[in-house]
Amino acid sequence: AQSVTQLDSQVPVFEEAPVELRCNYSSSVSVYLFWYVQYPNQGLQLLLKYLSGSTLVKGINGFEAEFNKSQTSFHLRKPSVHISDTAEYFCAVSEAETSGSRLTFGEGTQLTVNP
Amino acid sequence: KAGVTQTPRYLIKTRGQQVTLSCSPISGHRSVSWYQQTPGQGLQFLFEYFSETQRNKGNFPGRFSGRQFSNSRSEMNVSTLELGDSALYLCASSPRTGGKQYFGPGTRLTVT
Image (tube, rainbow over the protein chains, first blue to last red):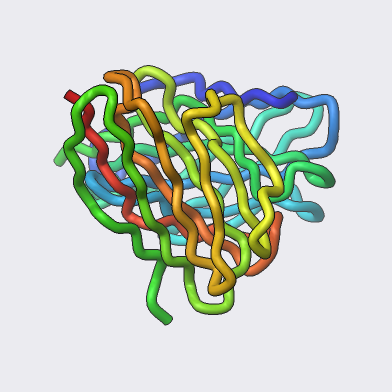
């Protein structure tokens, strides 16, 4: 079974500052990794995903993430945030070969961008 | 293409009742997954249906069940509702099992 730990439940940051949201995972098999964003009263939107290949993944809205297999991490970064990035962010994993569409989520990180 | 739609968006039920939630996937998508989101437990996988067959199931009691129709629309049913079933129920569709998932806006269920 796999598990996901998001190391920060809340991250406050000022507009135009860089941000990093941290995610560690645990699994005994190969995994796919995802970051989702959830705005208030909405569903989840996929920001980016790592399936294989290059460990640096670029996503929508200027976000990127780096897969580090040795540290079992998949941290999300953005060099300059906007007020509109305020939302909850979820890291998720699925087993590469066997779990189908089943995603295991972290507990979420609330990103608040202040003016 | 229209996105994933879920009905109803909001629902209030009394403890002991049962409830049925509906999910219409994106046209052409054959996989539908359901998740429960609560403040205490976070996002948890309920089950996945693909081509009318349950492909995967999470760790929920038998009161939680689902099905998928030939047009890929899916329903989930919760019987004998408990206060702890109050949650946002999210549905996600995908062209195939294991593919990129598109989430609907969710159904917020409140059990009183």
